[in-house]
Image (tube, rainbow, N blue to C red; front, side, top):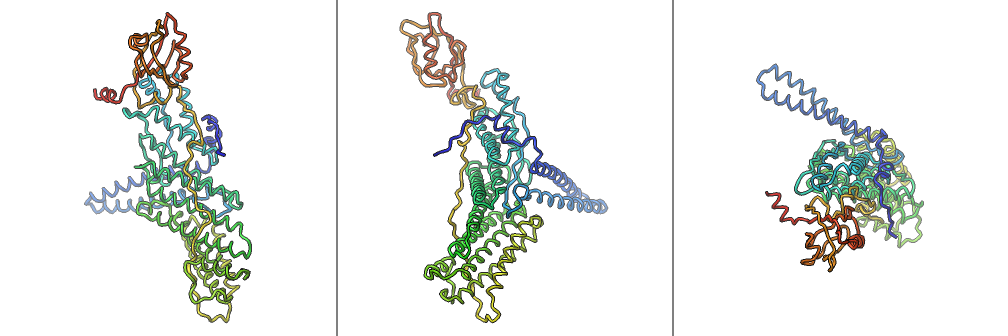
Length: 587
């Protein structure tokens, strides 16, 4: 049964989903990142000026002095960039320290903006309303935007971001006219480099919020307790939702001004999230593993091979020209480490299946052992226990080589060396392979060394990329008092008129249709409505001074029936056609 969610009050979300008053580790990280980017920009300007002076000068002493200055500037730049990369790749900030780290994303930062004056001006000019009557609505919207800058890392934080994203739909319809600019500039910073981008288009604001929805899911997934099936399933769900957010952003928002929202970057992030889902699936199989169960061991081997394959695809996506100098080195190193680590596990579990599982169902066992390989092992008879031992030994050799490569890559990256749990996992897996190899190795083994085929990758649970469910968080238009959106929108223009309607012997002489607002569907020629100046297509917005923009059909009919010989005071609006609007604009 589909889960229903109640309509969300923005104020409630602001209090439950925001860490605005808490100086969290993440906020400190982002403040340091912004400061570093300012320093880097200053050094870049100094270097540019020094290089121009060096090229323009013909004085040897000046050139020598400038060259010395350039060396200092380049040295400072290198140190600053190394510190920035260390901050950008701080994977441990977003997750628990007891498990192999996943790769989460930091949120995009945005400047605080004050939209009060532009919104009040638009309400006065476009809606012809007293803008001071809408100060509460404007304040509520600004508080909601302020709160979404620092969402908490939980479901409430996600609802806060989704609530603001949905409110942007109403804001777009209400205030962003194709005929004029609201004059608001949205400032957002790249999630990895901190490079600022500025646009007036609301689509940039929506896209950046959607990116943060995906980024927040990566943080939620990374901090799950993956020692339990529930924790693993929660991580899988979070990474699948993150992949869905990035894919939706890639498909629906183009021409992004920041590199983290470019199509190649989003494509890479989708692949990364899918790989992390696949890693969680493999962890679930290993968590359920029973000793000496052939089928489970082979399933674990194929799941591990699958993880290695998908991380290889991530590495390819990270290596495209646009991204290879943008993606943090620690991310690339982590992906390389996991590619080799899980390939080593695939060979290890296959070796254990070959050497330790009893021959209970020999025919089915041999078939399973053959099918787990990408090709049939050559010159080996798997009915022979000795050949099975030789093939297992060959797989362990491959596993040890892969483990050693994973450890080497780990030692090269400064950030990964700081992750003790990763070192422990890699070393333990390497030790297990060495121990198993020593266990089955025989001193008098002079047989030809067998060659182990690669493991056929396969998964029992394919990642299910989940598109954001925007309808899951239902919101109420903050500016709904302006009137029904079907009529009172930024794209429409209208003329408001006042009419005095007096009932005649034949009635009012008009036909009404619809609700909120009620439409004058027909006017009897020569009737009372025609004499009052009502026309077909008018919308009734007030009766005797009472606002009825949101009134239902029956309410307006009841109000009109109270019309006496003294008459009724009506306020109506007439929408202008696009042709008329264009003429007015051209004039």
